[in-house]
Amino acid sequence: FKITDGISRSKLFKSLSIRKSKELVAYGLAGEKAPSLKKFAGEHLEADAYHHAMKDKDTVIIDVRNNYESSIGSFQPPKGGAELIDPQMRNSIEFPKWLNDPATQKKLNGKKVLMYCTGGIRCERATALLNQMSAVKPDELKPKAVYELRGGIERYMKTFPQGGFWKGK
Image (cartoon, rainbow, N blue to C red):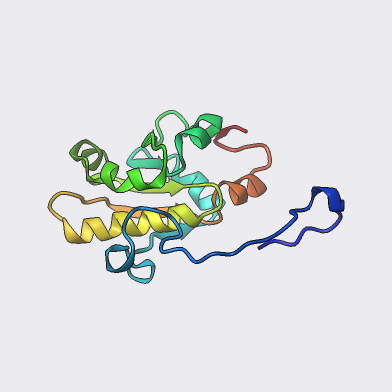
């Protein structure tokens, strides 16, 4: 929840409703099936370290947002740097299936994996899922390391107001 001062009453939300949810990011893996954030969450990288990591050729970047968000903008790493992978998801529930695809796993094996999303919540869950899957299936899925952009695109843009490697809105 964020308080914003200086907005006219006509532009404020008229009401607030709160409801309990089984999953914050819906992977269809509630309860015991859900990856443990304490045990499996990826390492957080600040925007400047993430920016530097995108220059590494042994790195892949995964956009864990949906198709609509990805079409508006994405990271474009420099030539000779990381490879951007867009899972082409309509919604988050498709992400576990995408990670289980042997073609996806082949792209991730032996690579540093950088994940990003808008504000950091989806990448928190996505890195935990990838790390859990690689712990359960070490012969099939072996990324070198798994990282997430702390604070997501929002914090990256505050650190790099001219855009850095970000292209789009």
